[in-house]
Image (cartoon, rainbow, N blue to C red; front, top):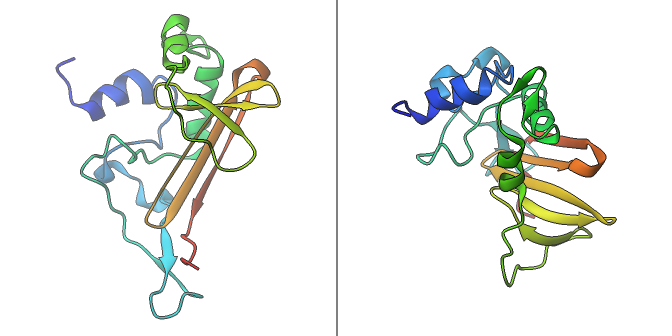
Length: 168
């Protein structure tokens, strides 16, 4: 494309999806709206300390700063096979490829009650009461995320939290 990853995502994905509070760059983060991460105090685990904003060197893999509203727009686009509002951002075939199980052999079993059956491009594929469900989580120092959607039911949801539990 001849542009940086950040600019490409801004022009081709975040702006068309009406995601004004989403960015990969820490310098573009609106700190007045920033949900700071927290982690337990080393000397007193009952106290939580706020962590200064940070990013990883591999920022494309986990440094999207977003809001539940903004990310909801992304899920709507996935559930609508690439369409958001009046715009077709991705071809339905592209979304189908993105979400196609990769037929990975020897998948480790998922912990919990939801059966993981495969992995798509960026999305673990699960079976939930006979339906295909896509679930993705992430965590880092002082935060955690959990996102899911079930295309056949036209539904999805997410939980974004700050605060990291004490190791015990």
